[in-house]
Image (cartoon, rainbow, N blue to C red):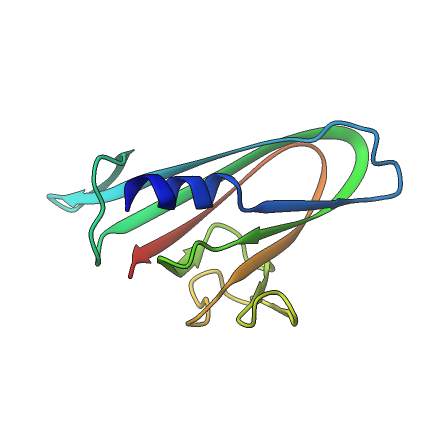
Amino acid sequence: MFKPLVAAATLACVFMPAPLAAQAVAVQSGVYQERSENGTRTIAPITRLSAGDKVVTILTWHAPRGGSYTVVSAVPRHLAVESTSHDGLEVSTDGGRSWRRLADADAVPPGTTHLRWQMRGGEGRLSYRSIVR
């Protein structure tokens, strides 16, 4: 399950730029396993995943200043999102056909299939916590 999960997570973003699409947008993603020991949470590179494991996906980007982009990230089907690092993201539970804004980053609806947010030019970072199904 390790390789398909990482591949799905790293290829899951779709960018819909404002009209000047000739500018380069660089996005990187990483998927890490979350561990909790003695009350301390840490993340580490994934070595092996099983149902019930906790995962943190981190998306970072760099875009030309002055631009505005809508970013859509599909959630790998093996993951159930529990929380995100930002309130106000939009989520879809029907494959991206309809969207609703999250009022609370810790209240992600069950069955979330996609995340969407506005990315402004410059650098940014977003993460979400999931559990492996």
